[in-house]
Image (cartoon, rainbow, N blue to C red; front, side, top):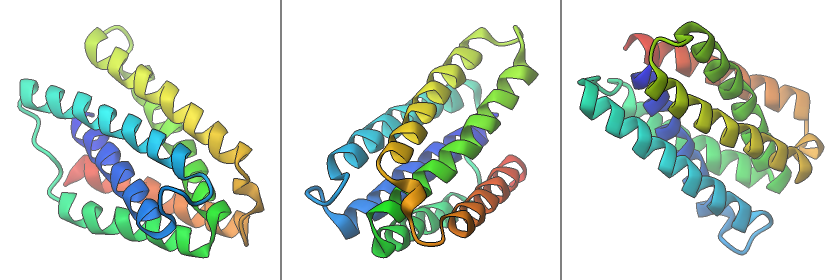
Length: 163
């Protein structure tokens, strides 16, 4: 759980870095993206700490997520501000489901990990709502874009759980 969550938070930071590289801080939603990036950086630090304390190794795919996350962020920002927000909404929809499933699996078994996951999930839900409020659903070909990103996110989760 810790490995895949750390990988996801790492990828999220890279997505926002790609979006900011294209749109800049002063672009539409720049301040909100920077705020969400800062929260994702905090989440990554939480899971980095747990990984170090518990001897969980990072995914071997981290170099792939480094490039792929930045590329996804940059590509959606190149499409436009609404597409960048569509990316966030799609990713956070999948992460919400993923974290909720983990919390159900954990039950009362590991209160520290469950609390960390719950706090991250709550922030991810806020990110999704902010992205929707910022016009995610107005992105060109939103259903297709959102579906493709969600599928890619599910695939990245499964791969990071195993590799």
